Length: 376
Image 1 (spheres, rainbow, N blue to C red):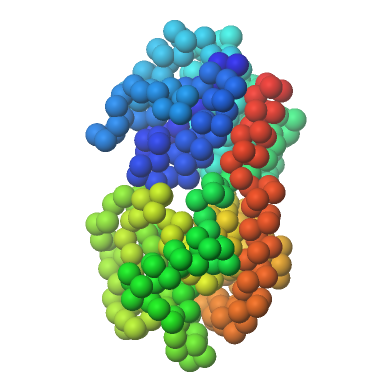
Image 2: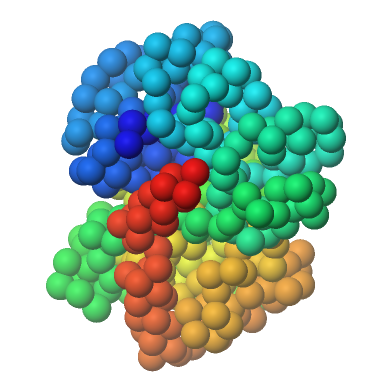
């Protein structure tokens, strides 16, 4: 098959500036390209060529200000069998008109069919023009089919994934050496490390973890809470909310470390140094990819009962779900529970790793997508 994978207009592929969609496309493209003709379309970037071929994948990049217009012209000329468009349902009608012989697959990574984002007519036009809709979680699937029952037979969940070869749990030789090296570099030897990875945004809830700290320090004076991220992908500028976090964290400077934006290729070693992973999202998260990363690294997970996040957690087996997700004390209770018991952390981490190896590796994701393309 001749296949095009189209990213949004926000970030380039490969994911040199981060982005869950960009990581997703970069990862599956090289696998699918082993047997098919694959082109990835994204926006231009000063660090990337406009046209190149890497690992069997053709990359075409267009300027963000004329992105859809340039995609239209490209697909008119290329005769793709399948076009997989990410997260832009309102583009489907335009692109389908430009390439009527092509089958369109839409992957939905957020609540893109919300009333605030499209009218009923726009939603029905999209559904009529796509062959398949894949969503990153059952939660996102329901946001589509509950409003548009016409989409039920076209919609299915294809969970995202992670490169398991890049993540090394602490019980492995590579994991142990990486853990010791990074802890040494950051002067965190002998600390119990609780990790947060994500945008420093109120909807991600890092302030709740800072508010939980006094209840953790009391029981675990060796706690270090590490926050990795910035206000936006690759943007280390400080806004009012981030400034508030830094000010709050300075009250516990012996127990809080902020690390600004880290390129995706360097993220795995920071998981390796950690003991517990926490996702404190307050919004209806589609299903944050950090869950896959934490499981691949062999970390037990504490996550909020928001959106699709709980779908990959088996309570008490690979992590805990916080029902009262706005309450800092609830996070503190679960963090303390895990910090109290190294055996529990290890067994939960091993179970999470086994889930990722079986269900959430990129080979499995690519296989699931190919099945959808073949159906289309």
